[in-house]
Amino acid sequence: MKGFVPTPSPLVDLMVEILFRAHPPSVSSTVLDPGCGRGAFIEGIVRWCAAHESAVPRIDGIESNPTLVRVAKRKLSHLPSVRIEHRDFLTLEARHYDFAIGNPPYVPITDLREAEKTRFRRAYATAKGRFDLYMLFFEKALSQLRPGGRLCFVTPEKFMYVETAGPLRALLSRHVVEEVRFLGEQTFGDLVTYPTVTTVTRAAGPAKTLIMRRNGSTSTVRLPLGGSSWQPLLQGVHPTSGIETLSGAALRVSCGVATGADAVFVFKENELPADLRPWSFPTLAGRELVVGEADYKPMHRLVMPYDRQGRLLPLANLGALGSYLSRPEIRSRLERRTCARRKPWYSFHETPPMAYLLRPKILCKDITSRPQFWIDRKGSIIPRHSVYYIVPRDSEMLDPLCDYLNSPPATQRLGATCQRATNDFLRLQSTNLKAIPLPAGLSVQPRSRVSAPTVGTEKQVQLEVPQ
Image (tube, rainbow, N blue to C red; front, side):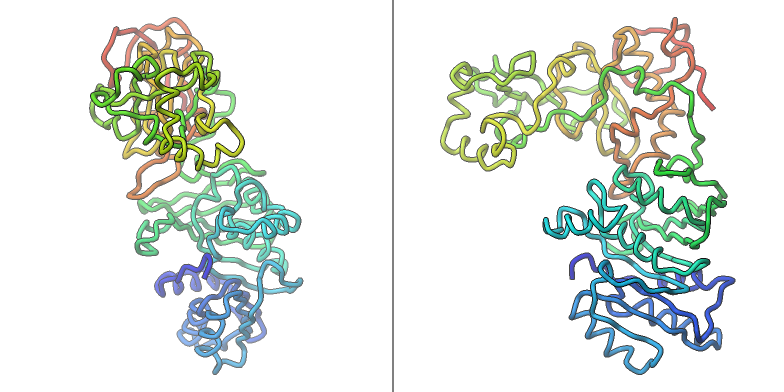
């Protein structure tokens, strides 16, 4: 049942009500349920029709899983206006419907066969990058709607801001996105998807969109044309066109080193063999940066087969480290990594950019209950892949920049634009960090200071927060 997620009945009834709101179906209306599963949405339409004393419209339920098809046919066989088909919706011939409703399958590209990826990329404009099948369902279903037809889908919210979904956002912006309704994290039980109900009319856009947020607030916005992220507008954050961002003030904004085998390369400080110490650097993982604490203390060291220019050293030049890595059990483990198929077996998963890593920098966790930033003043710490680091263009701005990143305007901005992880934690990424608007004067002569959770020499900076 690849990608099948049962839809709770209360959500089904809500979506059917939204779909038919001010647009009740007639007996001759046609409804599409792509990926119909066991027929939950069809049953919801039948309930709606009974409650409104309306005839059941013609409904096509399309499902590729034979087991689910048998269940749906058995439950709905008494309804002559319902047709359940064992078909792959994404290969369905052109048809025309007045309504479409459903919960498309959530199938990431990593779960698809190579032949499927190739076929979808040839057939769908939305099959770009690391696409998910539900994005293609949006495109296909919209193409099946008659002019003025309406669609109501529940999907993960990620299509509104991830780069991969840019083509889908561009497609939707050419129609009327009536409503975006954010649902509670536990809507699907233990499956954390941060679901969203999106209602679209096949008509020329743009138009105003009603936003219903998880905190109960609502607003009406005009979504951007093209494929740019919707997240800032949906969360009430104003565009920052023309305002300098962190991207312009930093030499590098990136996650830390990915070794592909931390268990091999990372040692507790007090367990590192003395002969490996010359090859090691203090290192931090995200869990060692504690939100609310002003300082941190690296408790681990990372042994590195690279020089300070980021060049992988010949194994013969690694001395004790080479001997350690060449142990049969260690080498075997390293050779099993995917990166060993294209790189020397003892290299890291990603080549460490030492020229940036060994500079004074600002650090933050990749997943956090709230954003917080710390300073690596000496530039001696190698952050690992669960830590992001920011290298300012001007080292004199290390403190003022960290101060601002810990200020309410920057924190609120990240809270409104970052992806959500489990338990409503924030997932910080370089894209969101780079887009933080900087206050006027941050990169000029400093004059006053906002406190930051770091220990060190105080500097002064004038902060004018962009509106």
